[in-house]
Amino acid sequence: MLTLSTLYLGSLIQSSLDNPRSIAEQLRSALGECSWRLCASDPVWLRNQVVAPLTEEVVFRGAMLPMLVPCTAPTTAIFIAPLFFGTAHLHHLFEQHGHGLFFCRFFVAGVQFLYTTVFGVFAAFIFLRTGHVIAPVLCHSFCNSQGLPDISSALRHPQPTAVLFSYLMGLLMFLLLLFPSTDPFFYGIIPAYSLQRKTDSEAQQTKCKVPSL
Image (tube, rainbow, N blue to C red; front, side, top):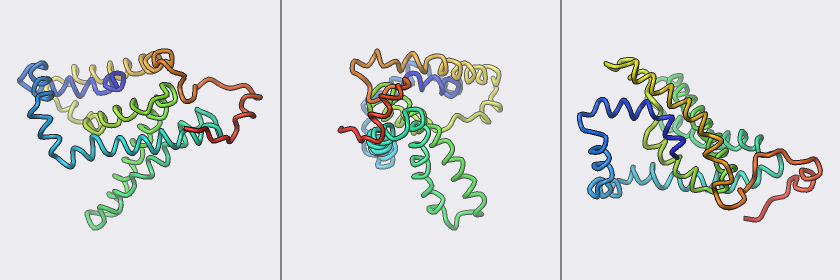
C-alpha cells in the first residue's frame, strides 16, 4: 500500500498545501478516536472502505485468479480477471437512469469501467506477487478513500508547478518501487503463483487444473 500511496503524492501534497494545519496535526486528527467513531457509524464509509474492498478482492482476486492462472498463464490472467471486475461496476449506468443524457451516463460508466479495470490489473499483480489477498484489500480501501487524482485542480492551484512536479515524482517512485516492493522474497511464503514463465512440461502438467485453496 505504501507503493500505491506514491501515486497519490501529488494529491497529498496539494491537500497539505491547502490545509493550514501541519501534516502532523492532520494525521492526529484523522487517526483520532473521534474520527474512527464517526467513520464506524457511517454506513457509506463502511461499505466503501470495509465491505466492498474485502468482498470484491476475495471474489475477483482470491477466488477467480487461482482458477484462471492454470488455464491461461499468470500474466494473461492478470489482464483477463480485471475485465470481470470492471464489468461488475457497470451497474452504475442503470442506477443513474433518468439522470441526464444517456451519452453522458454512458461516458461516465465507460470511464469508471476503465479505471476499475486498471486497478484490477494492479490488484491482480500484487496478489500473484505476494500470495496474500490482504494487500489488494488494503490498496482497494485506500483507492476508494482517495478517488482519482484530480489533475485539473492541480492546474488551477496557486502553486501548480510544485503540485504537478509532485504528481510526476509520485508516478516515477511508483514505477521504481513496484517490482522491488512486491518481491515474493519479502512475504515469507511461496506466493500463490509466481510471474516467472514455466517450462513447457510444467505448463502441460498444470494446465487447466483448479488448485485447492
